[in-house]
Length: 357
Ligand SMILES: [Zn+2]
Image (cartoon, rainbow, N blue to C red; front, top):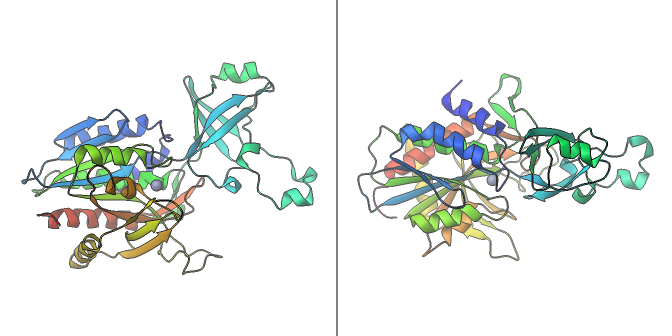
């Protein structure tokens, strides 16, 4: 197993909902401390890994968010059932009949999001998805006291409980939190490969918190670094599956990293129109190095690039994405080749970055 592959598997297995990223951060610290010049954290929980370059004035920020979407316990009823709220954007169709893990102070407690048996579902009900607020978690107890005795409390974070796997010997990895642990693995791999290279810019690799609830960590991190250029590393929506038109999601799974040109959530200010001088440079670097890449513009989605770009006095910011299927569900897909090429593209970009763009 390659280093990148192993980090993907290990990172994906860690439970770290927005606001509860400590375990992910601890893993990255363990992986990277020996390979960088400096490591520190801020009060929100963002972690910084710094590799010094020959020009102390030139700063490049890389950013991958550590958090995954999940839930939080808000109530335990008298029969022991656990109610929960969403942490991040969920599609409620994906949450019914799943095994979930509650991270309690006493350890992990498993539960199932049950529903009515098919035998008693009406025709009208059968056609509807069940709203999140109607779901509950059955932890196998019969009373509030029994559930409390397991250690479950309001405020405990909940994740999908699924062991990741490479499908049938392929390079396709299916896991609960490829958004964005695949990005974290890429970030860590870039820093490891840079360790014994001479580079011009100082590189700040930021493992950021709370992206899924509003891109909160990345902007704060950018404000403190004030980089000359920043790149967010995240998953991007790839199509190629039945019932999705090619023009809806043109990014090809397994087609190489996506260089994001534009994203925007209409009706809000959220989005990042990436300046052409940056997207041009990224494409140029990919072509010079023979790295396959794609370019994409999307609506109704944003990345940390948005909050980085407008933090402080503003930063020239782009996003490099790892094509992914089925994201924001219990099992997203990423392709190992896309991750490897993303690592290569970012390293080639860093090596070409010798003065301000
Ligand atoms: Zn993400």
